[in-house]
Length: 180
Ligand SMILES: [Zn+2]
Image 1 (cartoon, rainbow, N blue to C red):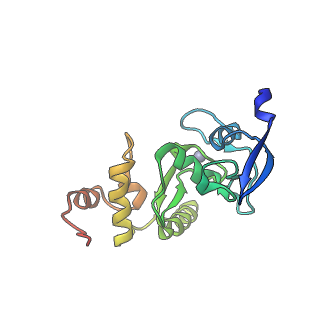
Image 2: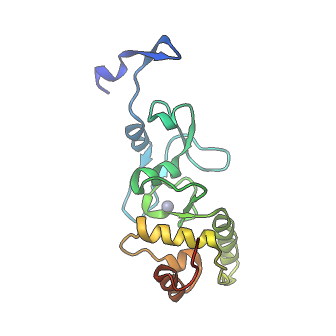
Image 3: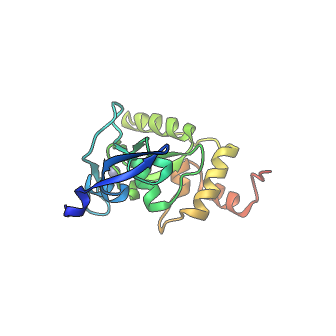
């Protein structure tokens, strides 16, 4: 740590001057708490964990929208790598490891996806096949958003959403699920 990083800083909060210790920026702090490994391995969060097993980090200091908040480490990993998370979408784990923040293991889904994903993994553990999941307008929106903003070189939306490749093609071509 350089000498400058431990210098106190005068900040103005609500019109009052306060002295606070300057800390590393959010992005730098974030990556110092990640056990980065190979591209396909889980990158475990070494900072604090919530009782539900997800990593967390203080948003202070950081961009204004994060100050005063406790941020989910996996959501922040997604945002830092892939960009903003659209309202209402969850960041899910391919690897089923809540403490993992490898951006390659994270994908977007709805609350229903999150539930179905957990239940599907539980069923999978018992040797049952995961049934094809129904599409609704929220899932269709997510698929279109992901295809546009986060395609990835080998992104398999059909597997992620539990539908056929043909269904994905139709959605992206607009043949089915016309919205609005
Ligand atoms: Zn992982």
